[in-house]
Length: 298
Image (tube, helix red, strand yellow):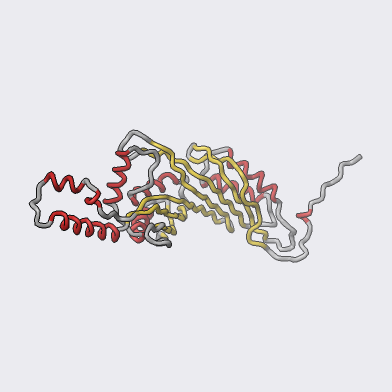
């Protein structure tokens, strides 16, 4: 008995002829390798459906092409080969291919003073597309940091001054008394408010960039901000963090400008859109700033 030929419904003509911009799959589980680190990723893979008469694409061909991502360290060249495989397997149907990779990158971070260290998780997305044979890679990175309000700090200092005047009015000042006062609850009658903040970086890579410089971009961002959130800490580290916050006062506008200048210095970056969010502890709403930049053509 001859084996039955399985029906190929996708090859049938569509009842309503219309091209589609993106057809594919989202949330595909896949292990990937970035800078030697194995990560659990979720993949979105798709192509355009240019032939409006075609019923659909061959999704299994996209799924099978993703196996290439398991074989080597993730680089722009590998992403382009996967996208080209998407198109080669859809000749006559598609001219554009798309790939999005979502994962959490883990970086080991030392404490500020003590010998402790711990792992920090950075949500990342890698978006690659091949449109009309033009290849582009974009990175999305979230970075957490602490921000202390300059206005709140100034108001707190004024209250401390007022308390000092009240407590030492018409009293001879002695070094030991002042030192004791500074170490008491009255010495910090008011404290500035600070908040956990986040920087959302959307970066367009230079087309000649051979690698995905995720760790470098994260390091540059944290260095510019100055008060990245910590992992394992002892009291000495917590004190050092308090000192860093006190010497690193910033509004959301300050943070956005710092990141703008830092990202511009990277040769790997051709353009970016950044957004910083300070989750206010004073208000029920957030303070937000955004900035865009595109490198001028040579």
